[in-house]
Length: 233
Image (tube, rainbow, N blue to C red; front, side, top):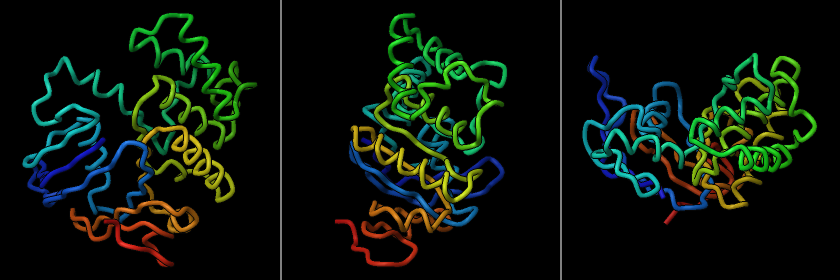
């Protein structure tokens, strides 16, 4: 579970990025986070990955308190959160398999576990026949599937996807979002930051809208960008 309580975030340069946000994301939820540039979306991601600490308020992530977490605990907290980036961030000289194995070795997984887990996640994302390919030999959509597999490979409770379809055409974007929905249905909490209103409106999910560092909408239905919706209790 993710819980933000009266969270404020002011950067050293004086920019007030987050202004008193309170929000709870329950285990197993799928949440879109939307808003214009400068609304606070990127700062929320940094807060949820403990890249920055809030200047006020409390943040709980999967049983860890970001406010007073010991430095030695941060890697354990981050293992519960997988992150998917818009620009994929794959290691170009490593194969698909090696990219995933690298992420697993970083947390001390044994070789047998690595082999079994990578086989499972590659099948899940539809790349079971691409394990030995380099990222440069894959399409943009396939590279994003590798990035999703990497986020999944250490079996996190939660995945945060930062504009996961930003570099893809509409057809591939829908495929990726459908895959994220499938992963969510298997039990993983999903937080998707996006500006693509057409995609948001195709999925009947909870939508949290940010503007000027505040939550200005929190609804479930056919999205924040128009169509039927009902306020979340």
